[in-house]
Amino acid sequence: GGFASVRTKPFVAPLDLSRYSGLSLKVKSDGQRYKVIVRDSASWDGVGWCASFDAPVDEWVDVQIPWADFRPVNRGKTVKKPKEPLNTERIMAIQLMLSKFEFDGRLNPTFQEGPFALGLKSIAGYHNLPTNEMSVKTAAVASAAAKSFGMVDPNPPSETSSYPELGPALTPTFIYLSSTGVTRPERQGLDMAKEPPAVRLDSMLGGVLTWKLRAEDLVRDSGLPYTIIRPVALTEEEGGAPIVFDQGDSGQIYQGGKVSRDDVAELCVAALGCPEANAKTFEVRSLVPFGKVYQEDPENPSPPRDYSAMFSELDPTVTGKCPSSGSE
Image (tube, rainbow, N blue to C red):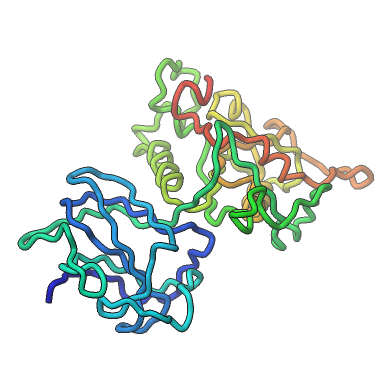
């Protein structure tokens, strides 16, 4: 007795959280001290790695717990000499607990008998990355998948970030393919008569652009390394045409714009292997207008795209959701 908890079943596939600094929990507490436990084995009653946390009463907050704060425990007692350190590459289960005790018989100073409540919206990994007004530029080598497209970096970066204490540079693990125009149905001051049908008729179409924007927000808040790509009108044309990035969801990007599905697919793969793409939201279109078909000149082929340089020019703070991050 003396505790209540809930835990996940062992995950079918272990979670690799090794690229993160720790766990971030979005919670609303009743003022008592709770515990979060992670397990790196499928054993139901084996060693768990436990950390306590406090949170304000009746207020949704993000509680960040670094991996260093997790201690090995078994049935509330500290395991003095665990066989292995916490394996963050193999998280098999996550558990939340309210206990009368802290560790090794010490009482929980905030424990109260009776009803209790801990609201939970999300559990995610978080990064302790240095930041500034623009972006934190890191360096890494493009993935083998990206190389298969023939993409070449003329100045290959190192395999570690610009901040040695962070270890390997972070690359996106989640690519969300959105679309241009997602911020425009609710943007003030636009002449809707000049907007494309998808924007003008968003409410009649079930709010498809509005829902895509909400999905973008979930991705940005998830704690995952991500890239959000907003293509203009997609075509079945062969890829290889010159492409350009833009930010702010401005009207100019999609007026008469198109882009090949092949080029967008290559772009998604490139982002997975490029740390400069991390936490970036941007639009993309071809420089070839509608009505014209791109044809590669076999005697003068286009040079490989330098995606690292293209991603580096993007600002992670620009999403087009506020007047300061985009124009009409």
